[in-house]
Image (tube, rainbow, N blue to C red; front, top):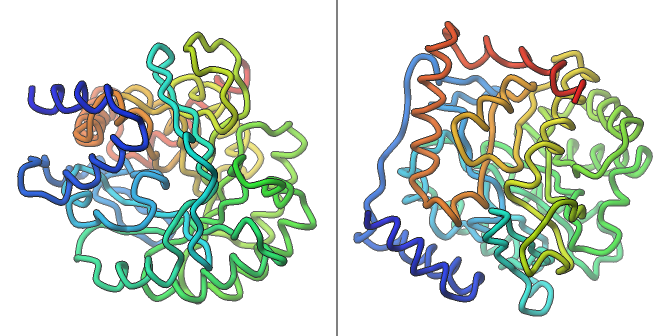
Amino acid sequence: MIERLGVAALSQLDPELSHGLALRALRTPFVALPGPVESPRLKTHLAGMELLNPVGLAAGFDKNATALEPLMQAGFGFLEVGAATPRPQPGNPKPRLFRLKRDRAAINRFGFNNDGIEAIADRLADRPEGIPIGLNIGANKDSADRAADYSEVMKVARTLVDFATVNVSSPNTEKLRDLQGGDALRALLGGVMSASGTVPVFLKIAPDLSDAEISEIAQVALDAKVAGIIATNTTLSRVGLVSRHRDQEGGLSGRPLFAASTRVLARLYRETDGQLPLIGVGGVSSAADAYAKIRAGASAVQLYTAMVFYGLSLAHRIARGLDEMLSRDGYETVADAVGTGAEEWLQT
């Protein structure tokens, strides 16, 4: 009841202001958090990491790693913070975040606003013990060598995180998505992998890709020996939206992204023959959504936008519900269900 009232109150404020207030509230003793969710069925092995459950926090919620300790108690199996760039940057002009209530979605054009890797690294150095934490890495908007920016952030962070994510799929930094092209992506990943030490490196891709582009990215990822692919980032599509902010520029996240991002996930699962771990993100707002992503090929899932509408305890509820669904269908572990419904998504 208290959480519902809090969500309702925050929904009346400017979206970016309410996001900041939510982060502050997490750092107070007044917010009750449900604690970790674990069971033998939910235990997940991902790129050398052991997760209590496969439900993770997507990058963007805690950009600057300021709420690590409370987020570890919110029911997630892992967290991803960032994106971090070499130098601090303010991002794009405000307003740059819009709620689409009727669509259960959001549009943002933040533009990698963050405190810079040095400040974020200081916070990660003091991180509490607990679930794995990863860092989403990006490039400064005015950088003369964006590929070098990724390697620079990786060098600073590699002893402080459990995994890193190369973000070349944000639509809010001009021409950033050009780095998803074959030759550019090969060069960028080569530099990041050289700088990563023993840290698993994931690649986060866009949903607005053709089958040919997905196939090329899958091959580049396999050749580069990345730890896995995160599918997907936000979309530029506006198909079917009804909310008044539907024509705002930026990346769309939330419920309307679910089907498209899940089809990309299933395509990647086929292209990699199930040999490369995948993380499914985009429109996850229930245990059924998480289960669908897993059956489409994901070893783990992430969420963010749905918490705007359903509260921070959503991760806990999804993990519990996922455990029940796995039990209902006779799966002993999450891994047993991965990819069992991929072909169904490729036929839709």
